[in-house]
Image (tube, rainbow over all chains, first blue to last red; front, side, top):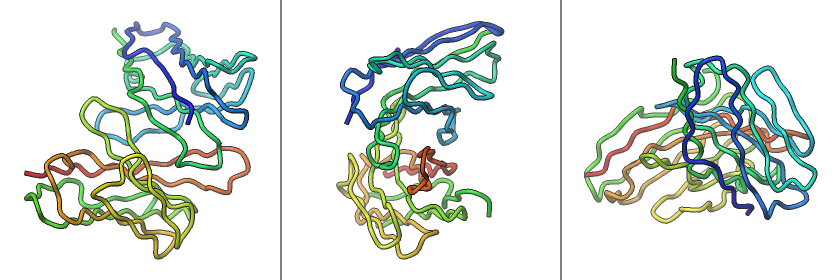
Length: 111
Length: 115
C-alpha cells in the first residue's frame, strides 16, 4: 500500500485559495489518488479523484505532476464551511480495501 | 432509506458484552466496509466485503467479525467488547465494479463506548 504524508494542520482566511499537498513516493502504476473531506461527527465525503495531470470539478482541483509522487488539492476561495479534515488516499481504484486513510490535514478557515 | 444507515447512533456497553452494529445501504453497491476512527486520528479499515457472500480482513480485524448475507446489509459484531474498542465506527459502500471511480459513501457513524 502506498503511504501518504500530508501536513497535520493548515490555517487560512475566507476568500483565499488553499493548496494541500500530499506526498506518495511509492505510488504504484495502477494507483489512483483520491481526496475526501470530513466534517466533525460525520463520515468522510468524496471530493475528487485523479490519475495524472489536472482534474477539476465544481468543488476543487487536483494537480498531479508527471512523476505522480505527490499531488495537490486546491480549494478556491474557501469559506468558513470548508473547515474540515482532508484525507489523501492512494490505491487501485477497484479495490477499496487498499485505500488507507492517514491522519489527514485539519484545515481551519478563519473569518 | 437513502444512502447508508447505521444503528445504533451511539451505545454504551459493558466490557465482555456482545454487540452488533448494523449497516444498511440502498444503493445496490457491491462493496461495503467497516472503519473505526479514534479521537483525532484517521480511519482504519476493520473488514470489507467486495460482494455478497465474501468478506476480507482490513488493517485492524482482531476482535471483530462481519457477515454479508445479502447486498444491502453488512453487520459488524464485537463478540466480547473491550475498552480499546471504544471508537466511532463508520460503515461505507462503493460500486466496486465501477469502471472509473471508487468513491466510497459513508454512513453517519456509531459512537461506541466500552466501559
